[in-house]
Length: 216
Image (cartoon, rainbow, N blue to C red; front, side, top):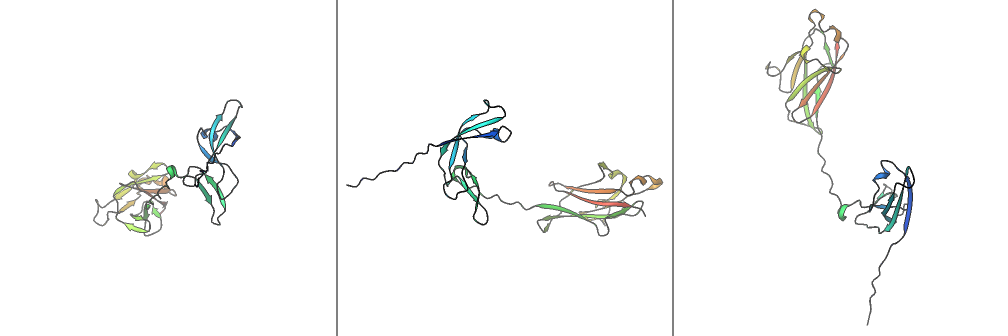
């Protein structure tokens, strides 16, 4: 007759650490699992918080740990590109299931351009601006939105003469023409300043472009 014996491993070690009491250490609480060991490759020693004392010693917290078992299905040994252990993560995989990789959402961005220098002449003619949208490096369909113009924090759209596609058949949907009149030196104080041209699309993409105000 052959008798098989089941081997049962019981872990019962305990350890304590003392930490300064701060916003980080106060998050350590009962039943949290932590790996506390040298940078070993197999079965690092794993503990569970069994007691938290924040009262007896002012300004510090005393954490008591009861030994737990390392679980390769939930705990993670982090290594660098050379295979060296650099960190331990207890309960890294929740419920023993690796987290699904997050789908990367391509970044939709806008870009405002002009065919000449990024300048507008005070009292001069119209300046043409246009906005294009890209998904990564691929240009995508134009998204309607709203143009605004600022000098510093002040919106100066009302000081500009503006032409959109609604005003001229020579202006495309993604374009706008602006000029800065200066009758009776009404806008002389803006000379030398920077206009921030901002386009906010209906899908929430905000694009900005700066042009300087120069003399004729």
